[in-house]
Length: 522
Ligand code: AHR
Image (cartoon, rainbow, N blue to C red; front, side, top):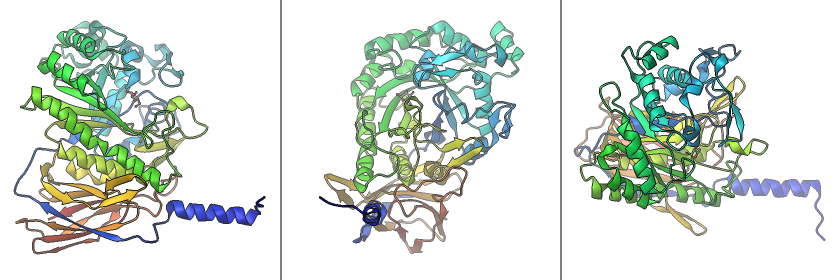
């Protein structure tokens, strides 16, 4: 029988930890080439690609956004100041609310009027937790306005009717003297709210009503007849789209709804294992888990291509947008937390993965005009984690921050030949990238190096582009699962990038393993 002494056990743990996190002993520098065609501008990368999703789920809204006016946590009209400041800094363009599954059980009247009179409901989708309705329409609009983001409101189709939708829209947007506009005024808001995007149902194939695409199309058509798209309400109408690879859903909606919708949504989550029963851990994962996670997330490319092909066949002029309004990592919840609250930690892996998805979205900017990561605070792949009055800005947050110059930039063709990274049965491209001309006139290149071991030297032919300066930022860390402590100093945060050189029309970029790099050329 083997006997373990305390020190031999510690030695085994130490060796295992080294295997998990240290760069492989044979870490190499890979090389790759790319071509930047700055003289062939492509579509605009809508700033809405950098959207957020905030649902009444776990501590996403309560604690995360809303602490109430009487809270000792600094707030403006009940909304956390630290969170607003952080979100302003990443220029959040649009926030989707109130769900998610929650939206199809939400009745807007529960969340207007004096807070003391609002009913308490059970949040049936998310842990059965009490929903106080303290955060309703006015509070959400205030939050969006404080952040400087556009509201994207999802209306209840699954357990409601067109009248409730119409009245909510009128309440929010009517400039007139009608009773609903007067009620809004009585509740403290004179001017109509700006509501540029409205979702008609959520996951109508699942939690939003378990409908078939044919049934949902009929429901959508009925609701949209009472939507009254006009000068008071000019919102983009978003139809509830497919679950991941279900292209039949998209096909039926394109045929049966057609131009009665302005956009169709798509939801795809990254589970390291691809298995909903055992998704994988947010921290303490192996290199194989890292590779499996990227393998799953890179399916986004194939997913978009498949849905876009279906949309192109019906709408070659690309009038209807494809909105990936729920995406991101979904891990097993942190031990000791309510399984219905979907609380997970966020590491360097999430930051590198977010950038890999941004690059994919940029490649399809002519059709993908909005995305919303799930979810902004304390839920799934969050930007911010809170604990009482303390917060952490996650590696995902910093990836968003680094990519701000891509908002409303013009996509540029950036052709790369990436080496591969192999572990076990998984072979992935070592990196992906995209380029754009920013609104400031500078050219930007974003790179996600998904190889956890090997650094990369990328040589870029920049053609006729005249470049004097190469500056930028890099996000990396020693460990794959490095995370920023709540209330402590961030260990995964961008620093100045000094790995770029320009000589004639040749740009050379040194890219560390497991990193995000955004360079600016001017
Ligand atoms: O983001 C969490 C949930 O995932 C949303 O409520 C739902 O739309 C999706 O299934």
